[in-house]
Length: 277
Image: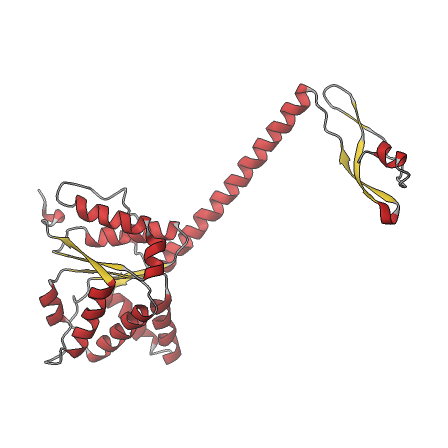
């Protein structure tokens, strides 16, 4: 409502001089809001001028404000991504291991496409608790694919945790010098994050302590339908042997049973790319 309209309606309004367009010098009436129950009119701003120069100026300011807002949003997004990458545990070597930096060829294309589809459809996998088991020899790019999935998951605003089996469990073990509560807090993080990636499963021959913690984490995520991605250099039989403590295969079988139910197998059986000439 303009000032003149407010006065015509009998609403009290203080005298406010009109403004002048900086381009065409047309008079611009004050605009405000009427509060009839208070019998008052409150000034808000002046009318916009419709001359071409004023319209162009407003559009320029709008675009500049949108650009500033986008720049700030991009900055906050980059900061959030960097924080999520830091929390994920992706080391310096894997910070740049993305799908874009993965060299695709005839032999590894199927594994690449499975991993990429998994990342693309992660919200569904997050709901259903389905993961991947990437198995194959050293240097076949299993860890690169797992890290690339982490990057895509982070972009979707999910928080993964990534690490070798040794590193993940060493982090728990190290906290017991501080307090048992600290170790249990880390176990809860591993058990509840959106995606847990356990790299090099079976590389370290486990102790009873390792098997207990590993089983607890996997079983908790199994029961809560939370996904895990594993990489391993071992076949199923060799992995069972690696997770068997002395002659007691019961814990290994329980762990593998859950892994096979939760995960789709992806075989990476080509040559070590690090040895390629």
